[in-house]
Length: 489
Image 1 (spheres, helix red, strand yellow):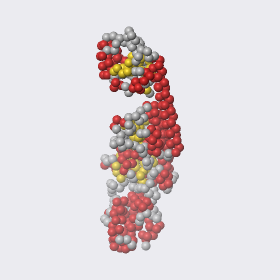
Image 2 (cartoon, helix red, strand yellow):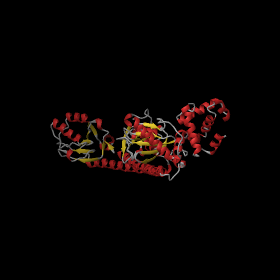
Image 3 (tube, helix red, strand yellow):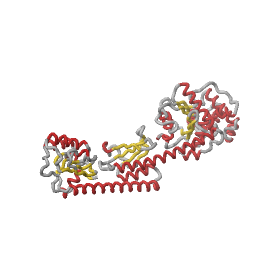
Image 4 (cartoon, helix red, strand yellow):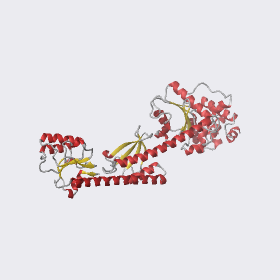
């Protein structure tokens, strides 16, 4: 677009400014010659109004009122090429132009309005061509980035370099940054007035954050709309991918609950970022949450390591034992959300046992009126020798499951240490000798076992629970042969 200042700088037009100097940076989108007494009825916002002055009132106060109506129509400026019998422009009118920051320019009567119009129109058309060319180049840049750059942060960086500014996408609800270009300016580099947030359409519930280092960067609304359109498509594609991941996860959990699959699909989980210690969450959603149960998988905190989710009478989730994941579910599903967390999921205890633990913990959380309860935090009743395989699995899973899982992940020997300690009737010296380790190492290992199992191996109650769990595991063949042999010698 051409500005009023650019017209003044065009020497061939021989224009002079009479008033409204503060508005010289207004842009012009068209030019109209109007000699009628009410030009504001015949023009559009952004138009340059050209007149010979014959339609203007002669009285100073009427001229002020006339100019105010013209300025309030959002015209860009007024050019007066006064003919001989037209009224003089009053001092009051020019003072009003300054007050309204509405440029009033003087032109020679010999200046043909068609020449001025042609200059404006050619400038506007050239600006339109430049804008469309810039949009086309933006699409080409983004298409190339889609082919060559695997992650969205990288693609935003490519766009940032192309547009010479910082770009980020933030969650509209929390204001937290979801993804940003690597060239995002710091708060010290960016003037507060040069940061703009624009809503991205579609389901994304996200804003595009534009950080300009100077006032000239990406001011074109057409280019911004083009960029928003590209990002809306990209975010929708990512949401569709997450929708599909959720469907696959629900199908997998359903098959596990029916006993149609075994918990031996670690590679599948690792591809989803689910590594390390996993737990089952039983969630009773609250009300008026940021995300509904049907859309919770789109919450930013769950996108890095998306849990497997299944809607049952409660929401079941197989997730990393991670504080961010648990807090996301508790807070984003609304006030009153209650969670029960199982012990670590192990092949020994089985997936369905972990679901039972999570449901039991959820029931206990409801009973005591707290938001989150982990299985085993609230002990109930006394412990007895299990009477069935299911009870044996539950006992092993409750007390030995976390220890077995820790040994598997970290290649340690905590369960062997525990068995040896109990076989030696809690004798520290004999246990350290049998394991060929220093006594202090034994102390450290037993503290780890206490943290994982939730019971002390040095108290009567703790020894009873752990010993019964080991005997149940051996009787039900739930412990490995090597461990059983080491404990029978």
